[in-house]
Image (cartoon, rainbow, N blue to C red; front, side):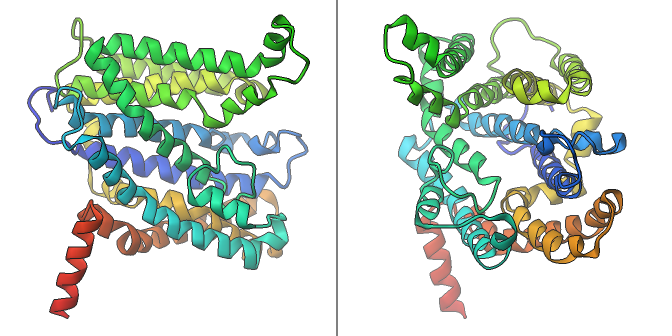
Length: 395
């Protein structure tokens, strides 16, 4: 599929990427559930004592990086074809995004809270109170310190907040250039990280009391580098719509090279360094993902065709639902059924793969059909209401 030849705003390989990324998150959490309780390492979140043949599952965080880049790519297509403007204006854009992601999220939030209150809370110690519910309800749970009924919801809040900054990226592209937008975004992200991490040194340089600028450390709660990841996706969308600046680069080979380098570094970098230097690994993964997307936009490769085939596409359709509800389902099965069996870590892991993964995938499919698909077919509340009235009249 050439960059200038396709007018379709939906590219089938995107569903495949989303589906595999969501499945990888599920596998990662199954891995954590099996080995996180058996490790002697203080970094149990990465399970250093897990066997070598499972270590490819330790980078679940990077699947979220892929999600954000893909989001920037897919959401960037329409405005990039409309002179860097939202076709229906900002109000229509944010309304459509809210209708698309918030209702399924709220249903998943209710489900997660009920599971935490009536079952898993007695195992995990999570106490869901009004503060936690309100923080999650209004998608500020990444910055408000509260109980976490579902550990993956922080990324939904971050992406929702990025939606409000997206118009600024488009303005920078329209008034300056894509290159200026990318450089400015990355520079702002690095400045934000520097200020947040070095707030004590900055206070000392300004002659302020120690701890007076501690609030700056909370800037990290917004995951500012995710804005750069989103911008990478927008840049990849430039290639698809034929607006890429400068000479035509071989994005396919570049994407392959960057992905190979990223995977090699992930395998070679010690786990402690991975946790400590996550921003650089996230940015490198984001650049690799964006280059791969740009390569797929230039030329319809075999990999792109496979990602757009039936099974990855089927999984990708309900990838958002899978991401939203898999954690409480995993906890119910793991804590209530599998752990009481008293199995060793390896046996527990393999049994969890056989039981938890299929249950999560099938449950997500049902959740998608009931709570997500209606909002995909009718992208506005008015459209959904009209469809409901037509259905009721025909019933």
